Image 1 (spheres, rainbow, N blue to C red):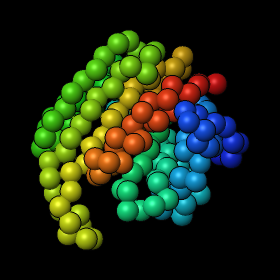
Image 2 (cartoon, rainbow, N blue to C red):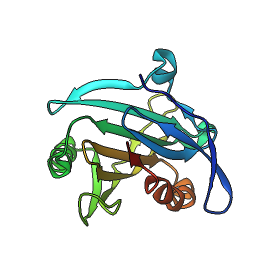
Image 3 (cartoon, one colour):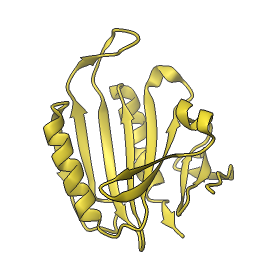
Image 4 (cartoon, one colour):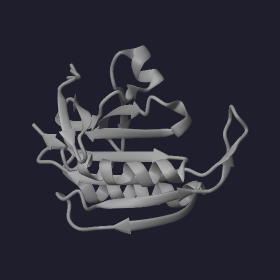
Amino acid sequence: MTIFLALISWFGNGEETSVLRGETYVMNVPKGWEASTGEKMAGKPFRRKIAGYEVLTTTRIHPEKATDCSIEISEYLKCSDCSSIRRKDSLMLLSSGLIADMSWHMENDVTPGNYVDLIGKPHRHLETGKEMVVRERVWYKAGKDNVYVIKFGTTSVQTWTHWLPKMEKLVATLREF
């Protein structure tokens, strides 16, 4: 069973974080960010099969809904092939027709330097009708027994500029156990 701990730590310029404990990892996330509505209702992370792997996805959303800002951590259980996950994701993103720009940054499978920056095509929000563009960074990190895909996204350039350097530090805290 997945257990979430609310331990306090500090990052960057003294901002508080909580330790998020997944089924196979721990990672610092911003304190006060809330579980997604679906996760709150179910009381546990979203579980599904992707490419033959069992995947657990945990989402945390900025408490000020106006920021449209979230972080999502997906655990690909018993998957040691990070490059195949990246390849499948890139093919899916290219074929989706939703991406205006995609920029890959690759190092190796164990560093948090593997990521892709995405800028979505402008579209209207389903509830507000407001036109928006989603910006997202997706990191790929291979553990010993599992692959982790961490996504940070927002529709605000100001929020992107503010939170991205902090998210980079937080992604580096992910540890498999």
